[in-house]
Each structure stands twice: as C-alpha cells, then as structure tokens.
Image (spheres, rainbow, N blue to C red):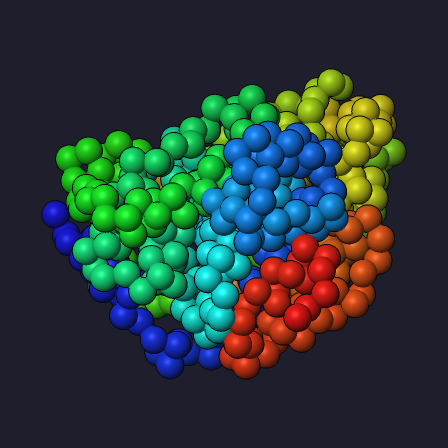
Length: 457
C-alpha cells in the first residue's frame, strides 16, 4: 500500500489558498463559471423535469438552490443530486482527459449545496475545496493504467466531492477518512447506461454528488467508516479498476494542481466526439460538403471508437445521439458547428443528417494508451475520387489548445440564455464579475442564488 488515503486527506485539509499558483487560481475561476453555466443550461432539458419530480418525493424544502428556470430550494443532498444531473445531462461539462473524469459535475454540485447550507463560505474557501477535490478525483483516474469499465466521473467524483465537503466542514483527518469510507459505501455507477445511451449517466453523477453530502453527514454524526477506502483489499482500486499505481500522484500533491489540467468542452457532446467535430470543421473549410463526399474515415485512439463509435439510428434517443460521432460529425459537416439546439427531437430525426452519418466511419488506430484522445485523422474520399485529410494532435479546449477567453464567455452566455429560455445578460454579467473577483467574495451563496435566477442579496 502506498498510503494514498493519508496523503490525500493531509493535502485536502491542509493546503492553503496561498499555495496556489496563478494558473490554478485562474482555472478555478474559469471552470467555476463554466460549470455554473452548463448547470443552468441543463435546467431546460426535458428530462430534467422528470428528475426534479422524482427528487420532489425525497424532500420539498430546504436551504440549497437548484439552478436555472423554475428554480426551487431543497435540502443540500437533493440540490446536489439535481444540479449534478443538470451539469452533466448535455455532456457539456469540463473534463480531465488523462483521468477520463468530468470532475466538477459531481464536485461543484456538492460543494455549492454545502455552501448554501452553511452560509458565509468565502470565495477562497470554495476555491480550495474545489481544488483539492479535483486533485483527488483526477488523481484516482490518473493512477489507473487499464481501460475504464465503471463510470469513473461519478465513481472517482464522489471521493473528490467528499474530500471537498469535509474541508468546508472543518473535519479532522479521522472524520474525513470516515466520510471517504462512506463515499466508498455509496459508490456506484456503471458504463451500461453508456452502452445503451440512457440518461442514467448524469443520474449517476447526481447520485455521487448527493452521496458526498450524505457521507459527510454520516461522519459528522459520529459514524465510523472504513478508512482504507482507496487501496484496501475491497477498496476503490480493487473493486472498480483493473490496474492502478497511485505512487506518482501522491508525490505530486501540492506540486501539481490538477485543476489547471482540466479541459473545456466546446460542444455539448461526449469529449470523445469533440476532436472529430473539429476535424469536420477543418474538412468543411477545405471544401468538403455533404453533397460531394462519398465517405469519411475518422482514425483515432481506442477510447474514441469505444465511447462514440456507435452507429447512427433513425430512432435514437438524445442521450444516445450525444455519444454518437456519426450524428455529431454529420451535424458539424452540414452546419459548421454542434450546439445546444442540435439535439432537439426534430434534429435527431433529420433525414439528411442520418444519410450523411451513415457515410462516416470511426476506426481504432490501435494505440496501447487506454486514455489517449489524440492524434486523430479524418480522411474524406470525395465522389470525384479526390481525397482530403485533416489532423489534430490536441483537443480543442484542452490546455494544449485552449478556448479563448471570448469563446469561454460566449459559451457561458449561451448556456445561461438556453437554461432560462430567454436572454439573461443581467445574471450572466453578475456571475462573470463575481467569479473574476472570487477572492473578494465573502459568501458564495451569491453565485448559487444568481444561478437559480434569484436576486443577489
């Protein structure tokens, strides 16, 4: 055993805001705003109404805010569940590529619910809870050298979120270990929903966020939990992964801040489809059109084929389509982009998109790296026999090819408008100002109230 649990608890409870380099502080501001935006946007998804209705049976009042239109207040655990679903339900939330983890969907939904309940949590306090939580969630994923087989965004995310909430509650190391033990007890989330294209994936995110709140509630109530929750004989690594070695991750704690390694998602689809979308844009810029193309072959690492190589179907549901490159690639080649409105029922049934999607093929390049997303090459064979190629060696939105500040803010504003069903520059402007000046925020409930469409107090 490498002693990972002791190391991450010491780091999670002991790291200070002054320890963070400027790039990490900026990343906190960036992905706090981005995650609030996609969480607001998720309120407009039809399935969200069903999730809210189900959650209404669990609790109907409380101190924590649910974001977006028709906002409600409910218990922290309930709010964490609903907001976690909303953040991930459109596959628009940020991702740590090497870890194959969407860290902030689970983490921020739990932390903001906790901040709503506590009151008086400052911007720097939230920033540090976010940062150490991301260090743990992504550190779990980075430690793994075998292909993903459980839904790691939820399964690793619950540990990160639990550590972050433990920090906000001022837990002792023993209490934090108890809470992380209950995070293991509450851990669940499989890839079966991915295979079938069902909305259980964001439900698993919501469940993990709620589980983090509940795990900390158990520890605070004095319930002793198993302490070797990561490396024990029946801990996380033994049960959920095949091969892992956290030695290098442990050595990096306090030296490498993983929040600075997180990537934007420029498009509301699975991350594995996003490189291909950029390649479709590149082919389009070189004159490839739906009318003149015979066939397109996207050659990419195994995870791309595994996660988004599914066939397009005329009757596919929206969650299936978001993880189908034949669909998103066809939309990108036809329109030049993939946006929030491209997954409507009408768009999913478009005959021209379906016909073009059938001419797109995803091919595994045989890379031995189970977490590699690049390089990717798109080769278009034209009807006249010509061939056009495009290549990427970094995903757009990643630290190697980042979104500009303007693109980041445009995405955020589009999410706010979509989530409220009408332009809300008042809310967007205030959230941008607050996150840009996070160090000066004395109570982050302001962020949550604005995300819920309420006046800041």
